[in-house]
Image 1 (cartoon, helix red, strand yellow):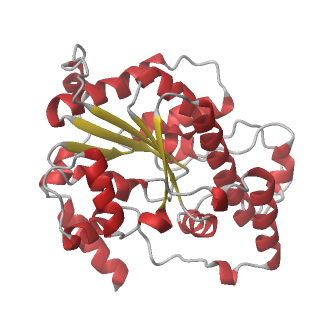
Image 2 (cartoon, rainbow, N blue to C red):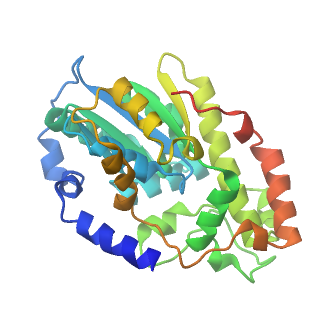
Length: 309
């Protein structure tokens, strides 16, 4: 019943002014803003995350104000391809992709004054994107690893690898599905670790993805200077009106939301499925051991990172 109610609310949102605001613009429209120059009163924020970490909800907080637009995965097909190219370090020029995001930023700033652009597909190019796009702020959105892995599992991550242990699969691997975004987004390990990864459970494979992605974002943030950086844990900020008030003050939100309006932002975020849960308490001992070992080996920093707004 809860899932059904959520889907109804989500459909209603699609007809709202806020939904119209974040519709993907055509390339011809974007070209109209090619010569736009960012001014001192324009703020540009890039949000990075591993996925399933609240980025879409967070972007819609910004989008709920007249002087901001907040988008997430606006060009999901191109963004997923960027992840694929970057992760595998393929010899493909990426300049046109940077120009696409820059044009979108120009349009946003010209029409709404300020913009937050979020995407989990940016994770493998933190330093590169920061250098090319010159944002005012970088945000690292994180979520508890158990909750994240549970969420990825419910979305079907790495289902196509079940029962394919020790097969002679070459990498880079392209997952064929009903859309290119999904096909390019589900990367697998490179080189010698691939065979070991194949023998992991689905929980283990997803944990590797979560840990490796957050590791790359974390390292990228540590290497960037002279840009304001925020670390935001979903568990600290989710449905937290005091956090929203701090956010509103920092980013000069016009038409500040009431508590009720802020709490209702959660109903505007897609990809919530309550019917395919696989909770940690139900994981096998092997799955729990793989999860623990991979976290400790690749990204043991989650507990030490603090929300700093």
